Image (tube, rainbow, N blue to C red; front, side):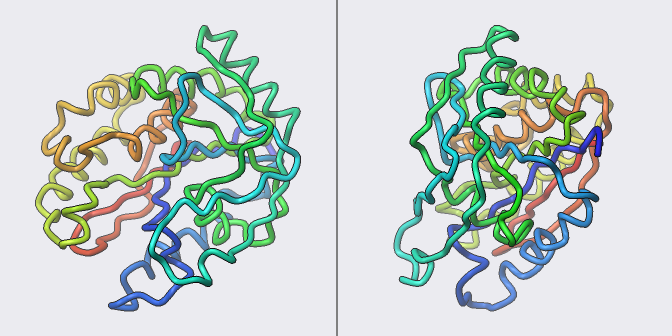
Length: 264
């Protein structure tokens, strides 16, 4: 299996796909799309790199444990959501290779053999690969939040796509939680989603230029007061190289437009 696509996916709100919600269809479309993503990928990848919006470090950091634990980094949810399991193995050798590729590209990088998977990893991947039989490594964001650095990190890892490694950015295309929970973000979400979809599906050089200046977009800071849930897209887009992007999910959750993108 060669030259896998890359993705930017929404991971929902906390453990939203594994609990009752009111109204019950709130996360249904997104969850159904995630359940079908493995078919969209095609054959099973040899390993997966996930860049989650829930892990920031001074340098790009990669999980390197052979059996990472889970980090239940969500609060106020039903007790059963803290008993969810996802026992995917790690990939220590791949972790070392990722660090080497990032350093060769002039980017700061290190491994962390003790860190587990946060919910930006295990919640969506319980739907995507529920058997937890594909090795997973998680890559952190860099705390400075520089979009160009994250595009560069993706470019540094692009060659892994030809080795059967699936690269997935896990965040949310809209992430203003106070407005989101009040159902007050629809106008901002739509303006930004329209721009983001045009940017993600633009010709690759133009795409990178647009994403590198995302905060100049309409309603950018209203959609992302802080950009940690958007930056995983930069890594996925950087790893896409000259492959075109397309919108593969267009959803509306609590009045807000939410999208997913596939490259290649």
